[in-house]
Image (cartoon, rainbow, N blue to C red; front, side):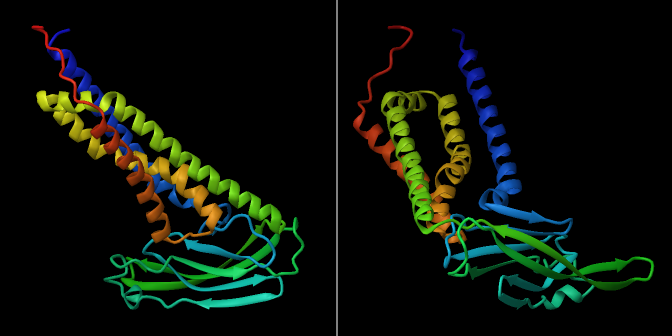
Length: 283
């Protein structure tokens, strides 16, 4: 084997890691909301996302309403009609939103998350209908007239929430939790086996070769994000479905556990594995 072959191999692997990193970033940005949702309904400008699965009569559910348009549109009011329940959620607009010079610099409130309860007498197996009347303001700036025009728009969405029996809900959530824990244990075992088998050799190669050391540094920098995305799909989402914890702090803690537990397993395996000396070409 020539001396350039390892470098070419390391370069190819590094390029693959970078491409994976970029693709993972794009997937997270474009699909992070869709992956959280269990039921959705969309119109051209407004969408509603259900974040709480496996609901039984009397359970609480969380819904997010999103208005697309970024700086141009801002939520003003959401009217929720759910069976005999009705709520009107008024949302304060940022003061700078109505100012022409700062309208494009300060994001308007374009999303809001709220919770409500499924009636205790709702029949399992029958969808629980949510009627959402979303009123938002459109920021229309006329360049010819050099003035800002604001138009109020109302769109109505219907979101049918599936409702199951209490026993079925408990079983589904327990299975989701077991699925999440199973993936975590499998990840720890796989990383531990890999580290025990090849970790010591990789560390020795990194000590003796600057190219391998550079590759190892690139690998350590690029790998966590793809792993976090895999953990988001395989571990965090099933755990969210099992617990109903939809806050960013909860999901962040789940991802931290997903990354830290295999890292500890790998570190323990590398410390236990003996650092055998590598054979050289002269030998």
